[in-house]
Length: 239
Image (cartoon, rainbow, N blue to C red; front, side, top):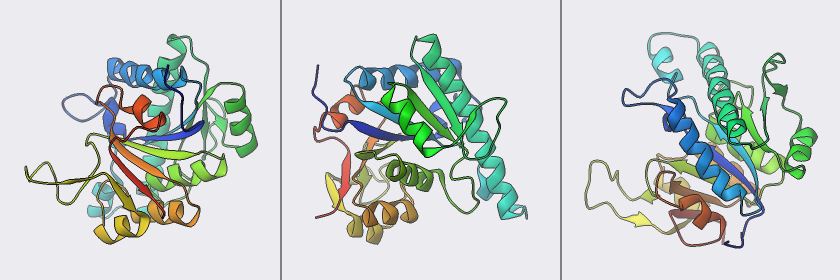
């Protein structure tokens, strides 16, 4: 078993990871596949917190484009992340793994409210925590929620697990010659206006010296390799 470089990890996963070919909803099999990937990291002795996006249900910018109030659109997105969190918790528990959902918007009948010390205690008791509803505030993305929670609960790294294997100089989906960066400083990432991670999240990590790893969730063993300290994806850090 690989010896982990990072002992406590914040894993940020987009909601698209749970969606089928149409890009919407939750496919239970995909939730199980995500849970299995996280389980492989957990078996390395790593404490894991997860923040999920909601792109498989809702994108606030679509509502805003049709005249919806920004705060309303963002709150809909926050609630959508809770649905993903409940589905992932269910997948973990069916695998025999202890997991808890905490939400920044109180929904006590289905999840615990987010309380920082309680979240840390869950990690210390070897439970996975899934942190839903973003920051609980509009105008902040789930990337920023991931960065904020990573700092609050004392994580060693934030891993942004996406469909691409790092940060590129141009969009690899449209440019076959795009070059991937192995590493970037926070300022370099901000100056590049990287599309895979929002600037507020990067700035928050820069101000608190929280390293970020951007990788492809679906690449075999990508999470284990990142947690073990191998070079994979793109590392964003300070020098």
